[in-house]
View 1 (cartoon, rainbow, N blue to C red):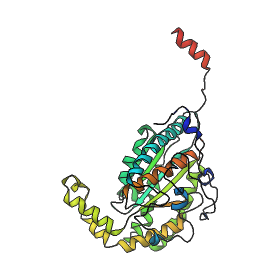
View 2 (cartoon, one colour):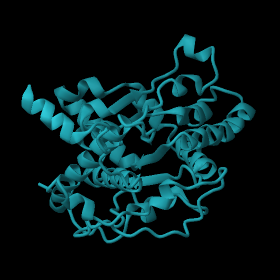
View 3 (cartoon, rainbow, N blue to C red):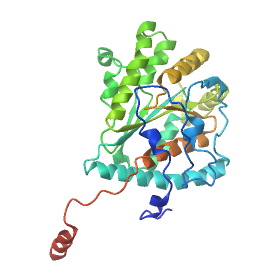
View 4 (cartoon, rainbow, N blue to C red):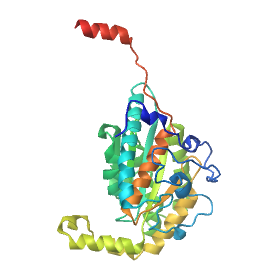
Length: 321
């Protein structure tokens, strides 16, 4: 365990300018290289900010879904690194939450997008689950309700953005409206085309309101998804996770991959870059997302807020009580 009193503060900060990136929506050029934080440099040879970030020319089909970019260890080493990282993430999140009580408006929004079975729930349980739940807001966006459909597609999203001091998690998100909506033709092409710029403008608003966005696509192969769906049909404790429609969606795999490619190209910006995380190995995906969250929080250069009362007076009052 880490010495929470001080040792965490000695770690190198990682690429804070990436998370404070200004700009009006231009794609990230990828020119800034980020160093590996000392928190996990035993196994990380390259920061995931560098290896996983979507930059101009990115091709989703070229991503090896079983690869572990920037990480030289295996599953056992990942477990050690994750345990170490959990302490750091918890410490950083607690400071973020504490600062909100002193008027700090900063917050984090983790956006998780993926094909079914890619591991979004595992990220929520095993990564976000390591921090104090009072500092987390979690929203899983399903198909919009009739009431939600009476508004623009961002209406229900705006209602769920995290408040000051919070780590917000979107399990699926506004990106469904340019992914499944495109594949299933749920809206006219012209309307979907407009949504990319509306999304960029919305995310720019969030950044201007002191939100750090960490947008993650968990990328699995069709074969890996088939294996995971098969497991659900062979284990009674996983029957509830299986939906017959999952097989129908598999028939549309190429269309979904094209929709993801377009979304990544059009919405990976300087202010809110995308990170594509190979997810056939669950342990790597969880470790990489943990690292991205840690880096985002370390980029804020957080410290404990000062007391807004006279410490000596309060000690005296307490002693006399």
